[in-house]
Image (cartoon, rainbow, N blue to C red; front, side, top):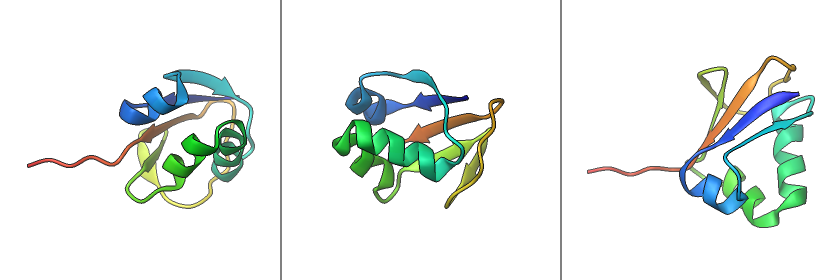
Amino acid sequence: MARVLMFGALAEAAGWRERVIDAGSLGALRAMLAAEDAGLGERLSGPGTCAILNAEMVRGDRPLSAADEVAFIPPVSGG
């Protein structure tokens, strides 16, 4: 069961900041979250949303283990 963290607007959209979720891969995790909340699913798959696996930004699908921490960070802009 991976520890899943949401930050910023994603946490607001999800209605939670931290959960423990049993998913075999990052893709499966995103699919589970999208099945629970289509709006959140759209945000997670949107451009600029970053997935951080164990403090390393990742793209695509990756296997997950019980010891993993996954964080989703919304797009940011600065100036």
